[in-house]
Amino acid sequence: MLSRFSMPPEHGADVVATVLEDERLRAAWLGELDGMRHGVTANRADLVAHLRVLSHEEQETSLVRQKAMFSMLPLTPDQMRRVRGQFGTCGTTSGRINVAGVSAHRSPPVTEGIAAVLETPPVPPEGVGRHSRAAGEGWASNRVVKAMPAAYPVSRQ
Image (cartoon, rainbow, N blue to C red; front, top):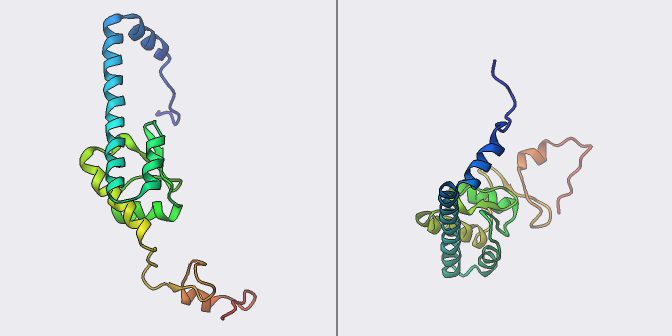
């Protein structure tokens, strides 16, 4: 029967001890770690350079200040959904992206997607019009508004 839980191996500490105590294994591990660190730094530099060319200083500055494998972009949840849906860039609605996963050939399309969502207002889904109340309150389907029961009156201005 398969277990539904994932647990680290009981011997994980022994593996770490073996690598750190053996000079050859430790040197190999440090070399791999250094290579990964340089790769993430290079990916971040590519993203920053492309954002600079596209004149998006806030996003550029945000990436420069961060150092880890993951970075937070100063984008709204809606902007991140658009970046994912329209431009195929993986990230969470909180703005977190995996910098290690954005290789040099992916930097241009990623930054162009970010620039596009910053420069254009969101497009409503097909069949959905602007909300009839104050501008900027969001999207609402006219069919949904008309179908609402009288207990939930909608004022039309």
